[in-house]
Amino acid sequence: MRTKKDGTDYQPAETGYTPPVVLQIVDSCPCSANSKWCCGSGRDHCGEVSDFKYGCPLPPSTQSSLVPADHDPLPNESLHLDLSDIAMSRLQTGDANGMMVDGVIPTRYRRVPCPVKGNIYILVKNGGEYYFSFSVVNVAGLGSLVKVEARLPSGEWVALVRDPNYTPARPQERFGTWVLPQGKGPFTLPLALRFTDGSWRTIVSEQAVKDWNPPATTDTKLAQFYRDFYYIDTGVQF
Image (cartoon, rainbow, N blue to C red; front, side, top):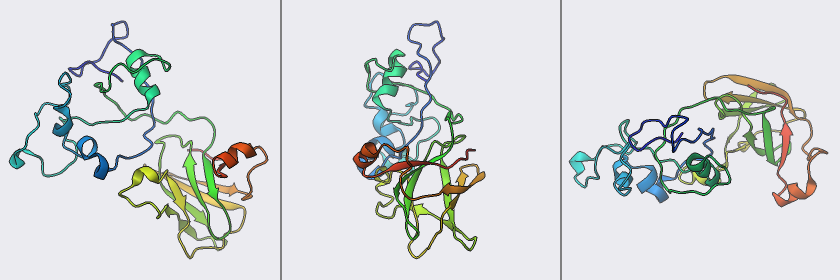
């Protein structure tokens, strides 16, 4: 939600008030390319916004003795978030079709359950008995997963890994894709998947994938446009 520059809240009837919005954090910020905004202590960018004081109590400092040893935001300093155009417009005007007035605004946030509808879906890129890769979307609760596993015919669960084609230094290009490690398989259909969220709750879809071909309801033109991505309903949800 948007706050005043001193960190206090607007009241609903007060000029400047806009309703809070629910957002999903979809990516991390690569330090190598954005160290000024994403990996500093909070002092390095706050000083550039001359009329924004909330969350930036300490001025920029070039003295190494005054700079924190780590590069994580401190509790009394600023944390920078990049928002979409729509989110910024809604926070500033209350209208998703409005215009962004300012490029930087003071906000505060808290974690809330992800307000999804329906089941967990997997967005498949490649599928087969020896190799498959997909993203997991529409997860309720925390909205994210820390582990995805697939079950072999023997009953063994195999943990999928993040796409190794994209290194940790390039997280913005991973797109949350889970892939099967090399040397595992073959897997038989129906394929069972086990999902674990950040609170270590687990849920199993016994027949998550019944066929590696796109479902009959898939818009083939749309699937081809997205390089043959297609969604599969896993039938389960946290």
